[in-house]
Image (tube, rainbow, N blue to C red):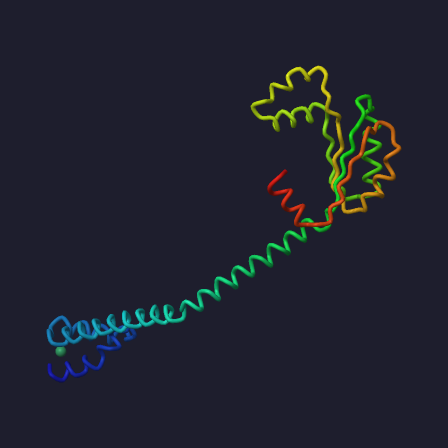
Length: 211
Ligand SMILES: [Zn+2]
């Protein structure tokens, strides 16, 4: 028994690590069943292993804490902030720099559908990528109602006699004068207003807080 104990003791570390061959493992387990002393040694080994693991984990957290000193946290936040600012600027520029101009074309009440189409087509002819929206008299009245909110009943009498003109609203990347020059003499147009706005930040603020 004494001799077997020595062999088993040599094997216990490997046994605890689970790296023994099946035969050796069975041999150790057979022995452990009848030997209290070796069983106790195995318990000790297991306990030591756990303690080591825990110590390692504590060291790991301590080192992270050390690395995250106050100074480093400030640097880290500054970098995040900087990245955010740069990204924000790139996005605003990409999105708004090109779309520098808007135009509202107010239409006469007696304008024909065909004439509206002609105006739209003329604009598209100059700028393929124009953002173009036709707003009917009814829609314009509805928009005004929404703007007035609980005072919308002020507009009740205007249902039959709608004073708001229909319009075509466009956003373009092309020089706005080119579009204005080419459509201003077309029939059915009452008035044209243009906003040439080359500041992407103004457009961003308009889009986000005013529109
Ligand atoms: Zn033993």
